[in-house]
Length: 70
Image (cartoon, rainbow, N blue to C red; front, side, top):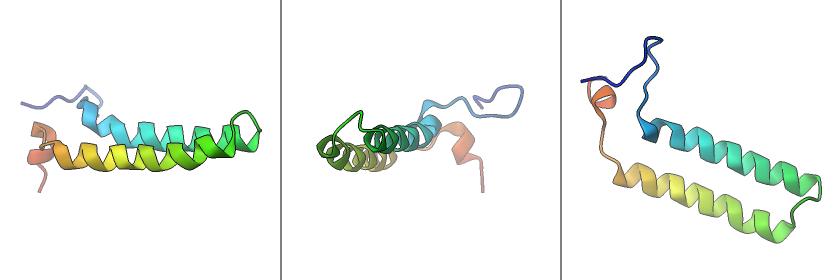
């Protein structure tokens, strides 16, 4: 039971967590460099996002597309 699109890309939501968090971390640093947000926010935001990635990876089981890969 694979949840893949016609292009072969997996549609499982947990595969989108890491790219989303990396994008948010990069956006936080960019906004800080442009002086849109303060240093305090960035100092807290990136460790929180990395922690969320780790917790998500620890708590998620393998989906059918991941379980079939050897």
